Length: 102
Image (spheres, rainbow, N blue to C red):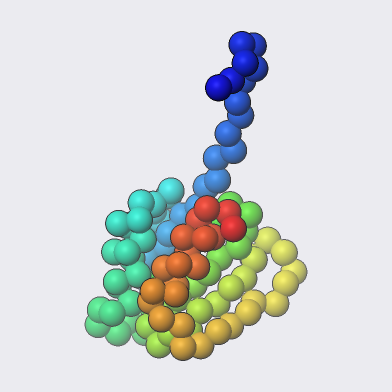
């Protein structure tokens, strides 16, 4: 219960999901995240191979059909990190953590 005269402040964390065609989906639902991740199982597209989730902090996690993920912050001078053999379920888990600000 909030005391009279006291207000609660909420911090809104924003993120976006980018599909294989480069379309942004702001503050995507879990259904949108699942749909975009499923694009990795469609016909190979060498011109548009990856999907990603980007957080307002500048951190982005990109996923490729072969299980490669790339973790980077385009706003900072930090080398991207690469991890191979990542399952779709693990990418989904990581995306949901990043979307929530973790």
